[in-house]
Amino acid sequence: MVQRVATVAFEGIEAKPVDVQVHVLTGQVVFNIVGLPDKAVSEARERVRSALVASGLALPGKRITVNLAPADLPKEGSHFDLPIALGLMAAIGAIPADALGGFMVLGELALDGRITPVAGVLPAAMAANGMGLGIICPAACGPEAAWAGEDVEVLAPDNLVQLANHFKGTQVLSRPKPGIRTVEAPLADLRDIKGQESAKRALEIAAAGGHALLMNGPPGSGKSMLASRMPSILPPLSPAELLEVSMIHSVAGELQGGELTTRRPFRNPHHSASMAALIGGGLRVRPGEVSLAHHGVLFLDELPEFQPQVLDGLRQPIETGEAVIARANQRVSFPARFQLVAAMNPCRCGHATEPGYACKRMPNERCMADYQAKISGPLIDRMDLVIEVPAVSAADLILPPPAEGSREVGERVAMARALQAERYRGLGLKAMLNAHAPPSVLDTVATPDKGGLALLHDAADTMRLTARGYHRVLKVARTLADLDGASTIGRLHLAEALSYRGATDRARAAA
Image (cartoon, rainbow, N blue to C red):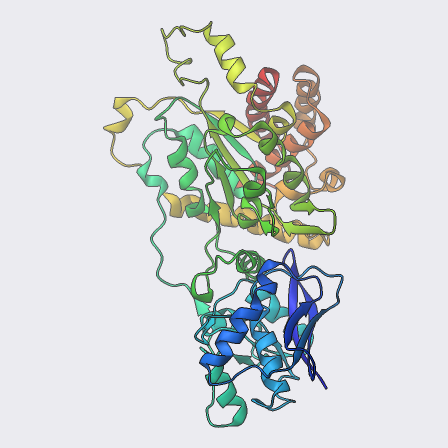
């Protein structure tokens, strides 16, 4: 008789159903796992054998065959340990044969029989809910699985003995409660930054519309401080956003204790990051930083120091909102609707813009152009706002803290985002922010008044705006109008939006 246990394999954040089929019959004593398993799945033989012995059971001296169907779907990860072990326990009579029929199972086994945490429990629980099944998972992942819904039966044992006793009726496993991360360090406040009022204004605009922001300035001017305060002015994740973000972090194994948080992600990778680390991929395809920053902020400090091909890999996720990793035998897509914030020095030494400074290598303008040319023109063209962040003077530092902090700015950002969500929901679009609005609706939602239209036509010729640049100016102007509570884009809104685009064009010329 073949014993069947339901589990999943992951393609991106999608959980694909897998049928674990365990067959025990008389013959040569072997333990085979078939069905396109990777190394971690093949090694499950030894973990399952030792875990069963530690739990007071022993593998029968027979031929054991485990098939992971469908056989042409790649199986990766250690979460197949528990379904294989439970299938064997049911086959030898250690648990009732029909006990596993209503459950999806995943978990890794330690050699002493404990069930250790695995990645991807949340999307697996959501898939189980959709199939009308309960879920069996490690105890540490129980709070994560409980978010799939009250209707989903969740069993989260600590070891195999507890689970066997539960099925025999000698022990009852209680349903875990959804985990919420409540104790978190307070976010850095904009009130800590003295001076840099124009940079704070650009940060507010970027946060309100989800726009990409590039800050250019000498070392110590406060670029990193400004970027680190972006999360403090962003509204918390909505329930739908929370679910998407948590599923990505679950697949990546970054949900601590299975606890979810409404705080938006802020990812700050080092400039030595590889293509696989930033975009996603690897031997076992994992989400990259662009996906881990989904619905949050991706901050790239020292932008020109990243590898050029890695930076150009950002171009598709910025436009489409997803990172697609293609392999010979599979194609995986991860959500990647992030907000890009980047910072850079004007040149390699960072002092080319200081009055009276003369570069020893070459003229200042040439030095700046060579350094900024490390960033490709197409990537610069995708930056909605490019600003110059001047050095902070001593006179600024001795001033008292500003009266306005992150709370006041965050209220305006939340108000502007609420207007955008209502606008695009009324149009039946998934886009919730101006930065993500498709060009086809800009004529409807971002039509300038007569004075603004004339200014835009003149600027498009003078500044030689690309089609992408033209649309991005309209999106930034729409955000400026939303911050003012205006229904129509005026000349002043377009003038400010074009001022940020002027710096973009200069940077693109250098590239």
